[in-house]
Image 1 (cartoon, one colour):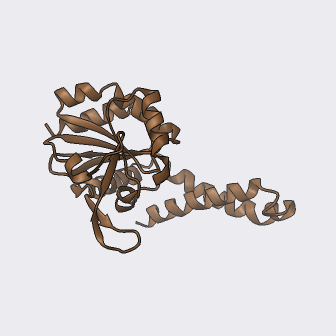
Image 2 (cartoon, rainbow, N blue to C red):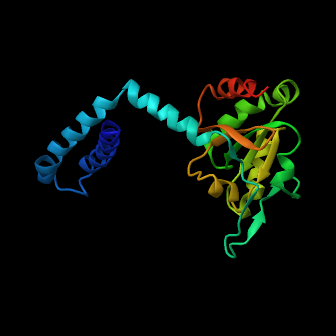
Image 3 (cartoon, rainbow, N blue to C red):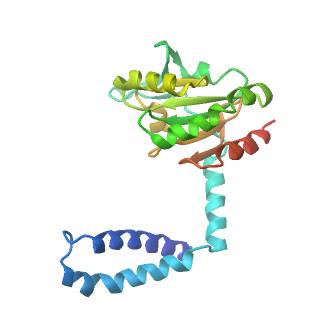
Length: 223
């Protein structure tokens, strides 16, 4: 526990002081060398001691698994102003709205990627998923869903992106971003594997070059 705490502090201190050290506007030149160098050296020592530490990596994996297994994908949320519990409504690319409960209840597994039209890594990830969308739907009983969480007025941008990219997978707009709030998503793409019972069995944050193989191996565990 002490080692993990020191590792976290070392990573944070390294980031803070490297940025401060590079900026002439934050701290004058002479103060940098007087105050920052000893502290930065200490932070770097902590940081280096944690790199490739098996105990730390194992602990991270255990926390990841425990945190993300068997949580239900949100179907309802609190209204942003009234705090009333409401069904999460999604808008499709034809402008029609439907509750997310109906989208996720077709006796299939789902790969749900939270994204936005302005997000480059989201586009790359979804282009990769598009290549296997039909195959997964037929052979692995799994549908891929692109779920935009951008502002309500940007639906037209999402529609334009779908047409430009030639996506045939399901694309929806969560105009109030209820799903991202319920799932504590702050960075996109953020992708979830949801089983037929609506439970989140796996999730990833950020684009990975082997994203398709990662999810295919996880889907096979559900079959």
